Length: 409
Image (tube, rainbow, N blue to C red; front, side):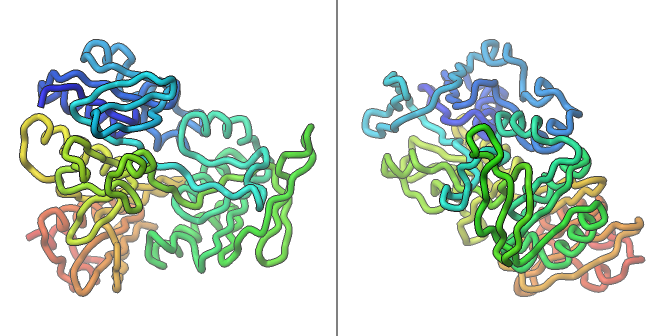
């Protein structure tokens, strides 16, 4: 396969695919299409070090702008694809231009879910956090003493709360589920993270949803100024961050007739139902241990894209996802190895250091994941066990004095 590769999406997965192909000495023409007006960059630091003013944007870019010309990677920015024509093997751009492809890669990522206008989601001062534009808008809002409401108690919401408190804002966080992190972590992990946020002055209200946001006070009377909550209370706010999950950007795939279901469905080689079209990263629904999952992580975006690059370059190895994630909040590092989907048992282990802890997940007696809180040894041990397919000794895990190295003996 030596014809043109067109990559829709200039994020982590799209760039990783192009970079890996060039590293493999694949010389096919490559075009990357991105909707933003900046060269490809890392997104995770946007809501942390970039927002805190500790990292300049130039340090977030994957490569200098000159890299693209030097590696014959055409970069089309501030534009987007309107339509995929699978029969003609071409994409039609917003300006009507048509680009032909031999191979197409969908690295379209995901989009934050927003609040409907009926509850005030269209008011000024209501934000999501996904790209540089979002972060730049928030920089102007993150001022000491201002009142921030965060809607959603997942990792995005908790990380935003940590940054805001570091900058001296008053922070309230509401979560309509029974507890924070309900969909992604065990109660034990949630309890630790809640205690940490409590100690930093974040007001967390669980089992509490949003009734509506109230506008007023701006030049047009359209800026958020208060929130009515599901428990009947009203709180005054200066701005709002919405962290209620994301949805895969699979519209183009659906419109051109590809198989779609909570993302673009791909096989173990990242191929879609059309063998000329690949998909990877947040937008892709991949096979994993007999199920179909969608992984929203930098690790998966890079690893899946690089596996697809190897296939395009003539390889034959399937992508074997080995999920890992992380979240930095205050001085706490949460590292996650594995995927806790369907867990039915947990085991909590105290770490050697004060404040370190790990939560080990099991499904039908089989070890599937670990959350390590300020416990790098537990994370590394858990990841090695998962990679090697070794079941850990429950006795060793239950004994805080036992050396985790014994698990790998």
